[in-house]
Length: 111
Length: 116
Image 1 (cartoon, each protein chain N blue to C red):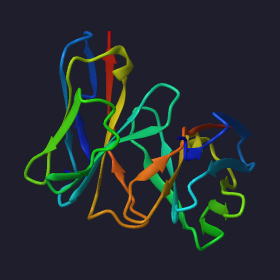
Image 2 (cartoon, chains in turn cyan, brown; image 1 turned 60 degrees about the vertical axis):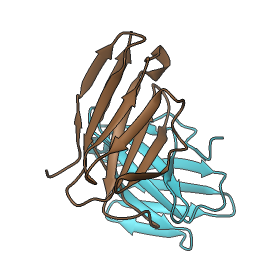
Image 3 (cartoon, each protein chain N blue to C red; image 1 turned 90 degrees about the vertical axis):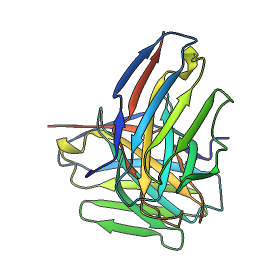
């Protein structure tokens, strides 16, 4: 039962352009969504989150959008930088419960 | 320490052998999680500790897997009679308190387990 799905295993963009990473979920009980970033040989690190009562949260170059009716969220990175190259994981959380992660998307930002 | 520490960073073992993976969480963090990432897969939940007790063990894939936590700090994940499908990166994460909404986990660098 894949409750969180990231359908694109990889994404490649040019430096300075926008990166859009997508995530779909099936569990309508999720009340929080988080994005984590992972570099090779390191553990994932928290990037940004959004409550299910919001539709947008912005933090610097990173913005997460939530469309509850479509059970879809996306992470926008503008402008993309080579240091953003990493695997990005989307996760959903039900209050008082563990995080459920997607498969991850490998982002490559080319100079 | 400053972050979550896991050891060993790499472990190669033969099929059928037992392995122990260790996690030192951030000091003062009462919540501790084990996840694993198999090749091409997402982060799969294994077990959650709050203090020394494990209220959620639902992710352990078989009875060959067990985990304990002592002193509300260090945790050990044990895999008995390892199989090739156990090969994965095993990640430990800790968080400051009991599970709550928007809980940000702090992950260690993981243990890469390879079962030959």
